[in-house]
Image (cartoon, rainbow, N blue to C red; front, side):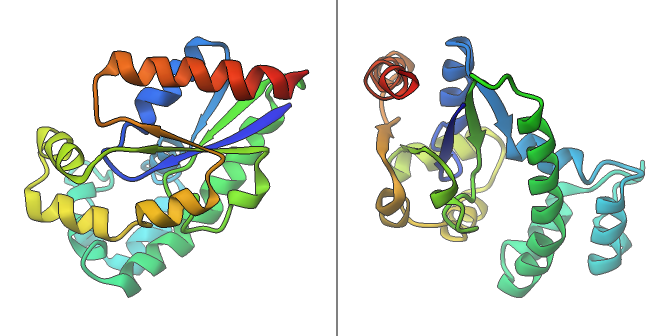
Length: 198
C-alpha cells in the first residue's frame, strides 16, 4: 500500500485533487468528511462539542450549527484548541478504520487539511501539497458564501504555505485552470506514484 498525505490550505483545491486521484483508482479517506460525520446528531462527538461550547452551537433541528461554532473558534485560539482536542482523535480513529478496509495494494490518499498543524507528515510515504495564491483562495471562499474577513481569518488560522512546503514531497499549483491542475496530477501519478508501486 502506498500512503499519500494530501494537504493544502482552505480554498486551495484539495478536494479537486482528491477527486482527480480517485478517478485514477486511488482510495481517498477525506478527513473533512469524517470530521462532519463524527459530530452528526446522536454522536458522542456532538455531545462533547455541546458540553464544551454550549447549546448555542446547535441548530434548531439538533444538528451542529457550523457557522455559529466557526464564529467562536476561528477568532479564539484556545477555543479552537478545545474543539480540535475533541474532533481530531475521533477523526483519526475513523480514518484508521477506513484505511484498514482498503485493499493491501491500494494507493491510499489521506486528505488531511491540517496535516502540518497536527504533525502527521512523517506518517506518509509521500506528502502532496496543493497551493493557490491568496487572491484565488479568497475568491473561492467568497464564492462559498464566506465574507472576506472570515475567509482571511480561516486562512490565517492554518499553516502557512512555507510550513506546508517544508514537509512536501510534491507541490501542485492550483492558481490556474482545472486543466492545468489535472496535468500536474497526471505528472505526479506517472512520476511518483507509478514508480513507488514498483
